[in-house]
Length: 376
Image (cartoon, rainbow, N blue to C red; front, side, top):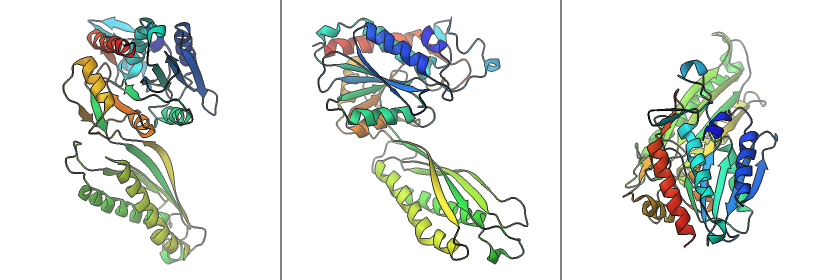
């Protein structure tokens, strides 16, 4: 874990050194490893397998990137692991290099030749900025003939089983109008006014989503949400705004609600806003930029991953959380998926981030029992 924390894998920077380190460690244990670089060549996903080359098996998944750390806010160097009073401090300690370190330690105790089902290691880039790496990795796995069956995503849950979370989809919608003098608003196309109309439709959509709340939804609130985070446009009181943009998000409880939001807003733009804008100036336009779309993890009546982790940890029941993870991407691929890892999300993204030794010990116990199950 000290080695991993020493890699300053902030999302804005490269993670290659850490990925090569992980690949070398796993290769030394006999794993088959693949590094998949992004288009820049500065970042990579790692997918490695111990055990037989066959269908099924379990994926242990974690992201390599961390959020920035301002050294002045920390009691010690954020990229140097420090142990104090049963806690290990460092950026990424719980989110989520502690889990990755535990998977490496558990791998060292495995007899790969004795495994009857494979254990896979999936380490990704850019989770913190939209699960970009995991999306690319899942696309790669979809092209393979042999796929895993189950995924455990080791985000910090205090080793409790999480079977569901909402998706998080962030967008910026840009409006291009035609500038003019504010004394004659009918001669221009006011991008700010059309942005305001767009926001009004988003707020109406928010009310529509309340009525779509699934019966028995465990989420708080139980329905999909819409939030308008930022509106910007125009240059002065007396100028028709030529440009504006709206930054907004939806957190859907289901893929169907995500599709409903996108379909509704696209239809409003194409059928109402754009025709009105272009009747004044044909060059007017509205475009929506996808900042990130993180699939939710939908609770399932039957979930083999939930059952497996409950048997490994002795946990009774599962819960849902408000934060997002990469688990929904694996679920969309067809894998049973849960989130379960050491540390508390309350420590993530904060100065003096830490994971306790007790939490790491509980994680190692789970992974050791998993190794025994895969060799049975």
